[in-house]
Length: 187
Picture 1 (tube, one colour):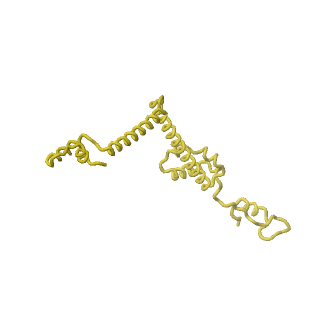
Picture 2 (picture 1 turned 135 degrees about the horizontal axis):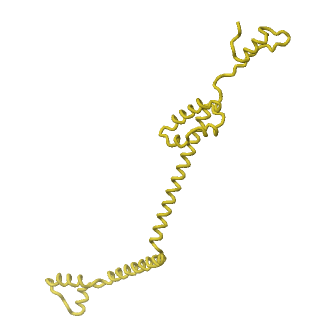
Picture 3 (picture 1 turned 180 degrees about the vertical axis):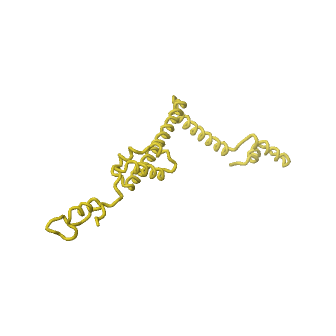
């Protein structure tokens, strides 16, 4: 590529050295080289292509109601929160029921459903200290309705003679009857 001063010399124009600086400043402000021009054209084409791509993508959203989409998003978020709350409630219910069943078994309850029917479930669910309150409530039911629970006392089954063939040791009928009833021997 030719220098501008060489081009001017070919046309018979020669600039004095003191005017070269002013000339160079003036032409650089007003003119660009072909390489700079080609670079600017390439960038312009890239920007135009990018703009066309963006415009095509924007056309896909023509007719879309943004407010409707926002209301749908809000509704779906509300549904999701409701599902989360429902799941948390079911999980708390499951844990409460499991803890209550374990406490009834530990207390010797014969029928879980019957014992649960005697309890104030809503109060126990709302309790801050559920395990202690469950044990207290089961204890109260055990006191008032002990038939719902197994006996803590061991069975007194005396082993002795049945009164046949003159067996050994206290074969009279009254002592066997007293032993069967759990009464002390008559002395």
